[in-house]
Amino acid sequence: MSLVNCPDCQKEFSNTALHCVHCGYRNQKSVFSQDLGFDGEVFKVMTSLGMVLFIVGLFVSWQVVALGITLVFVGTILLVIRSLR
Image (cartoon, rainbow, N blue to C red; front, side, top):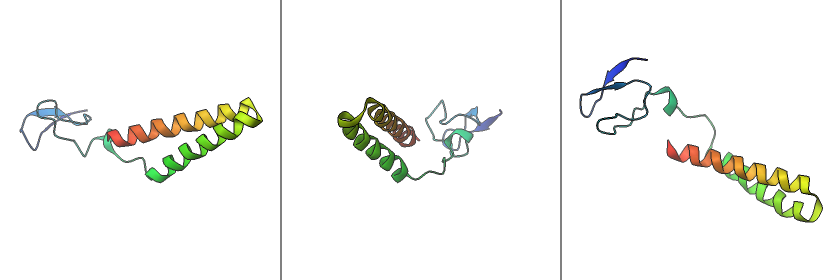
């Protein structure tokens, strides 16, 4: 971890920070801002499949309901994380 100069305000901030603490400039070179390599469609499909499994599970078994809830939860969390970047 080292300090770098912000291109906008010229003040120093950590090279691992997502944003400059002084002006809010987004650090594109941060290791935490790198793309995970997944397309947003994967998460949408996962969430949709989870909803279908949840509805089907209501008529079949509680295990299918639990699987559906898990897929919806994971898909939603991943979409939120992706949208924050």
